[in-house]
Amino acid sequence: MGEHPVDGCRREIQEETGYDADIGAMLGIDVGHWPGEERLDGSGRDFQAIRLVYEASITGGELTHEIDGSTTHAAWVPLGKVPGLNRVSLVDIGLRLLSERPLNGKLQTP
Image (cartoon, rainbow, N blue to C red; front, side, top):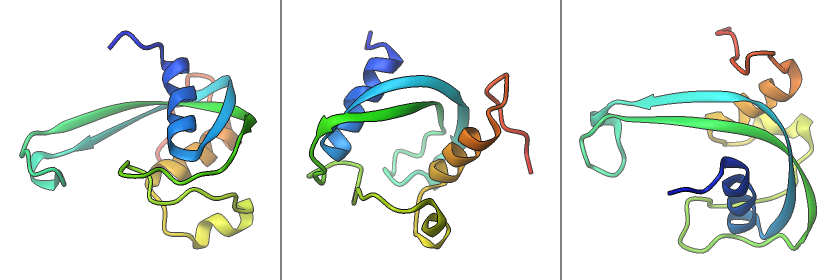
């Protein structure tokens, strides 16, 4: 509680990849909703996430894999190979935000 989103973004990058990063412009906002019966934690409660997506530049550190965390693997991948990867939906959302850069931060439904 009390952590600024930019600081949280920087911390999450470091925790999940081992990299240090400068956080740039906010690309947009994504809202996700998971009904209770779809929750993997078995809580049965509805969950809503508001995810702020930023540009970032790697400034240091070394690629490492998070242990006992939410990230199973981190790697550099050419953008052209991303469509063939097994990935979370937020990857595609981030790439769309980077490409489209909506002024209000909200992607239009395709």
